Length: 150
Image (cartoon, rainbow, N blue to C red; front, side, top):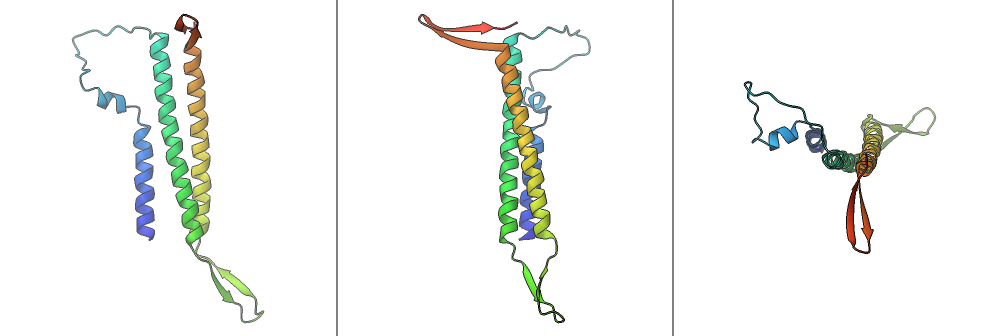
């Protein structure tokens, strides 16, 4: 059970890290190559391109937040499935809880993962608001229109 939990947690963590990788777009666009003989001229991005980048970052942060929510839920459920052992103290006759710390570690890990998910979701909202400042859509009687904000 512990090996499966450790394997699942490791797989989930590596998936989250991979989804946040900024070099992912470089690997996806293999057709873009640079030669050392050619000079590259930096062109300022348009507001439409900037809005697209902000929405892409927002989606990546939101996927990370979703993964953190799933991992946190799994940790909380697993901690609830671990049964506590009780021993009776011979001198006082009172039951005492025997714990190896696994349940507490899962609860603390679940809280930390949940907090990370909330922070990622806040970043996602921030990037969506930034994208909304770059471009806006309007509906009129003649149809829709697109407005770039400067």
